[in-house]
Length: 131
Image (cartoon, rainbow, N blue to C red; front, side, top):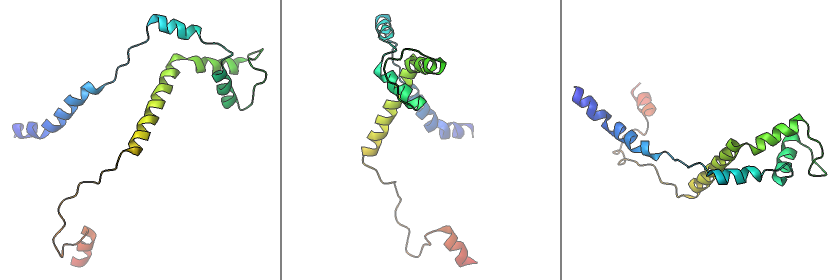
């Protein structure tokens, strides 16, 4: 009985073993690249302006701002946070995967042979006929 149980679990274990190696790893940027990206950040970034306008719900003219309050600085910190860059990249990747999935041809579900003539199409029909 124990061998039968092991044999019945084998396909699932094989599936798990094969999919363990499918993890994606992106190496971190080199220190020089990270330093360049950090030094390129600026409070006069046009993308930051769009981010602030979208999240605070009002336009900012003139740009760059002459004074910054706590909500604006908090949003600027979120805009430039490196983990948000990673989240944005994952979001773009997920959108691309969805687009690719929508474009791929749809396959029909596998069906068995047709039922013999006189076979009821669904179980509820058979129960009603017997009752």
